[in-house]
Image (cartoon, rainbow, N blue to C red; front, top):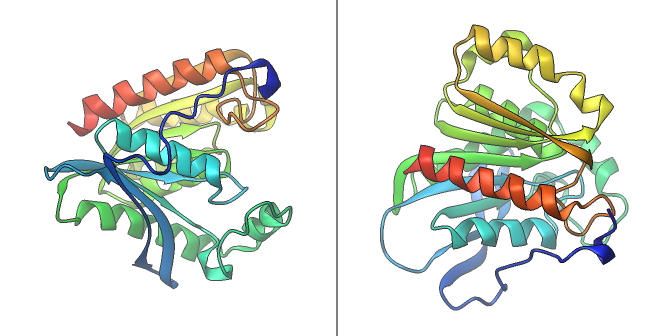
Length: 243
């Protein structure tokens, strides 16, 4: 669906008075990693959620999603995976190409370090969730395979991990898929089978009539009905698992 035919769902302004909103750096495998950080200003213990961007980089849409997560009472951290290459350049058409040039192993370690950053934050409850979209949905799966500190993971139309890696997962899993997304969807059954064999708690939802990137309200593929339902399910899942 075209965004012009849908109400956009931005809900938290970037100058919201009740939230701490800032660009920070944390230490990862490649050194300093830039990230967007959002949390309620109130001084109480908070669970954390790492938000992993699409192959378009850390753009305003992902910052908005990060603020939406904070609105629900979480610390939210959105790393810029392109930090080793100078960071995301806004409105650049080269970002997807640069994403492909990233070293997969060090990129993964940088994202795992984001989980560690939230887990060890002074306000942390010690529980951390991970969510990702598109390229970031695949990376969310990989982070969950490679970090025992992940309590709950949500992947939006992300590439699945290899079946033999699934046994490493210690988190609860929520997977959102688009109906019309053949390349990604061909891996669903193998992932489902591996999760069942490993006795890992999971839920899978496929949204009828949707295309890849249906959650992104800046995309031509945005589907308001599916996006709102997927978001409702995501928040319910995180509140249950991270409380």
